[in-house]
Image 1 (cartoon, rainbow, N blue to C red):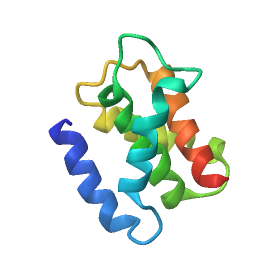
Image 2 (cartoon, helix red, strand yellow; image 1 turned 60 degrees about the vertical axis):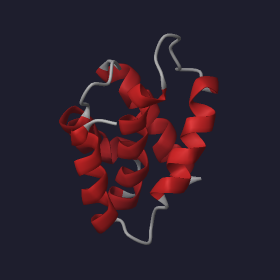
Image 3 (cartoon, rainbow, N blue to C red; image 1 turned 180 degrees about the horizontal axis):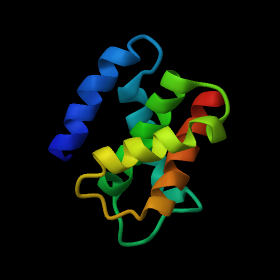
Image 4 (cartoon, rainbow, N blue to C red; image 1 turned 90 degrees about the horizontal axis):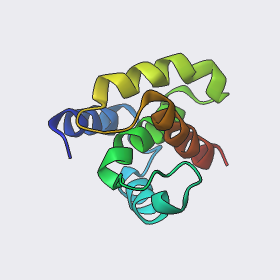
Amino acid sequence: MTTAMLDHEKDTDVSVAGRVDAAHEDAHWQRAHAAERYFRPGLDYEDYAGAYCVGYTGYAQYGGAFEDAEKSLCANWIRIKGDSRLSLDDAMLAVRAAWSRMAA
């Protein structure tokens, strides 16, 4: 995991404490990411992990409709991307998936 992502996770532990079980969500996405329709062969979980984190913590932070928070979520991804090989478009698919899981 990148240092930027670790710092981001520390920040989100404070801002969403009690509303997101980050360890549970991370474990889910570690198991499920390769079966997602947007998964790209040659990438691994570490490429997707930050995008999922942006999605599930973003839902806890902003709530409501994804489209209303999309700009902020995009900015959050760009800020924590680190060494991820995901394009912005691919990252936003993973962000949306994690957001949708939290909203369900």
